[in-house]
Image (cartoon, rainbow, N blue to C red; front, side):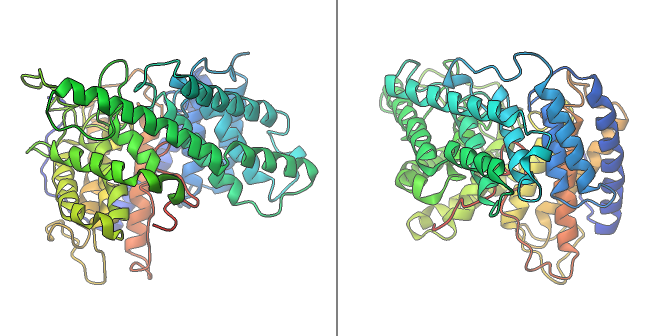
Length: 487
């Protein structure tokens, strides 16, 4: 069995849960900082740059006991080590199919530029740790973007391949959105060098560049849908479909849900022309959800006689990652009259998927974001943000009606607490990279921080006014800026 059975009876005692998770989080961050010095991998997904992204994420949560200046200093030092791991730390990917934030040097370059941009609003660029390295980072992003868009103009790669989040174009799009958000927050850079940095980063992430990349991804999706329609020979196919290594995955890492999620994070006027296709694809995805609340790993084929992937309830494959996309869509559909008919089935789909993630989300594969408990927690946090209706006097026993009070937050917090217990007891496998962001403990630290932020908001004086625009999952659902404007 891929998951650990539990009681299915959350008891949300906010002060007790908050204190327990906070204590574990602070201790784990200290462990990660000690371990980081021995790592030789640089990527976000498995390497030390993932630790830098985690520290950056935690600094924005204002966690008691974790100093934001210290976290930023750790992030900067870690990025410096990542940049110096080898002479090829910033070598250019050879194809747009391998250009993502999570698994290529694009991630190191992007986070370095973000930290440089964040610092020039308060001090001269020459006094930052990235005064010398930012130019090579910018050159890499420019080179990769140019290569990717030129490939799409020439159709030099499979027509529906290379667009997924973990390695491909959606991962590059995420990087550009992060750069755009960071550069828009700086108003008065300090000095000519700082102005040059800011101008360069803004040029890398213009709305036109984002638009061109979005359109390239959509074209490949339309091509993939045509191929899929022909294969089904009369079956129902969506207007958008992509493949990865010849397989039409549905989940967040390699599939339809992950790609659509990143598209929805783009500026509204960029993605608006494609919303009819996105909505119809989402409707198709909801339509193939199983009675259990899960989805198949890959799109059904005309020759499929059955499936053996029922137990994949993870961020990478299955309900956890798909839920984050659907909750992002739900934020938009609830206020968009043209999509109103989708609202009721969308909510029902999210509720069914969330129930499954809670029951089966205590995964034996470990604590990480990709195929561990952290991915399950972020899925439930995302559902809580859109479906829980916390208010004065809301029940906190975990027995309240679904969609009211802290129903889903209680379940996210329960899994977060159970992760502590079962990890300590040795009930979970130790992954190959046990301290990494997407396989290991760093991912769980991010999930614990997300739960703490919601618990603190629920118990504050202004709980009814607190609103979270994203679940905050690092590397996937943490873009800030002008997205969703004018919906």
